[in-house]
Image 1 (cartoon, rainbow, N blue to C red):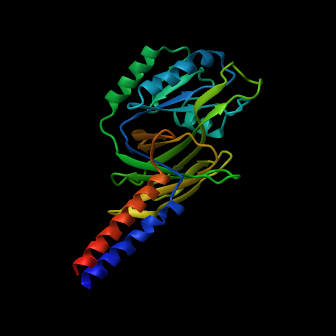
Image 2: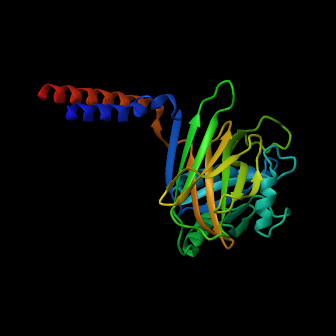
Image 3: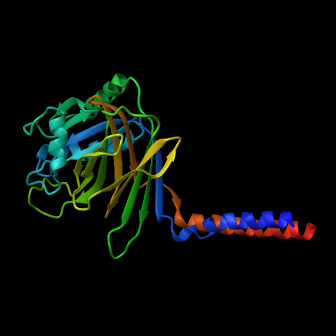
Amino acid sequence: MQKGMAVTLIILFLLPMITADQRIADESRTASGGHAVLLEQYTATWCDTCATVDPWVTEFTESHSSRIVRVALHPDDHDPFGSALTTKRITQKQANESVSLPAFWFDGQGLLEGTVSPSLLENGLRSAEGDRVDWIGMHVWWDSWENSPHDDTHQFHLNIDEDLPSGAIITVFRLETLEMTSEIANNGIDVHHDVATQMISFSPNGSVLDSFDGVHGWDISTGNLYSEGGIPVYTLETYGEVDGFVTVIEVNDEVRGVIGISDSDNFLKAEKYGDLALFLLVLALVCSTVVMRRE
C-alpha cells in the first residue's frame, strides 16, 4: 500500500511537466559567459564609406563570435534606423557627433575611425582582450511566445555570478536585422545587421537609469522570477521581431562583462517538452504497474 501511494505521488509530481507544454515558451535560448569584448560600431545608412566596411565587419564579428559582440549604433538624424540611444552611448565615450563614420570602440575605448581594415579591428580586439584584467560571468536565457496576429512576446532573463557594487551599471541592448525600404539616405546596403533598436540601463537593485524604448518598450522586474542563493534574476519583457540581446556590465566606467545571445541559440523547442513528458508518464505508469503486481 505504501509503495502504491509513493508511485501515485510520483505521478502527481510529473503532472505539471506533462501539461507544461501548454505554458512554456515556443522557443527558448540560453548562453553563459561574460568574457567577450564589446564592439560598438557607429554607422549610418547614408554613409558611403560605411557601405564598403559594413559587409566585412559583419563577417569579422561572425568569425570571432566567441571573442567579440557587436552593437551597431545609427545616428539620430535622417537615418531611418537611428535612435537617441546612439547619442547617449557616444556622449558616454566623451565623443561628439562629428566623429568620422564609421567609428569603432572596443569595450568603450580604442577609437578607430574611417576606412579601417580587418587587421586594424583584429589589433583592436587583441588590445581590448589584453587590457581586461578579469571579467564578470553571466547566464542569460531568452523565451519567446508567438502571439499571432499580434507581436510576439519575448522575456529576457539575466543572472550574474557575483554581487555587484552599488555603482555598477547593467545595460541591455535589443538587436535587430533591419531591411532598407527607402531610397532616402540609402548607401546601397539593403540589410543592416546588429542594429540597436532599444537600450535599457539599470543599477544592481533594479532601478532604471536610462531607457530607450524604441517601438516596443520594456517591462522590467528584479528578482521576481526566482533567486538562486540570494543572487537576483533580472527579467525584461519586450515585443515584436528580435534577433538578439547584448548585456554589458560596467563598473567605474570600465566594461567588466559582456555577453550576447542570438536567435540562433535555440536550445529547446516546445515539442521536446511534450515528448519528454509523455516518456515520463509512460515510465511512471510502468513503474506503478510493476509495484502493484509485486504487492
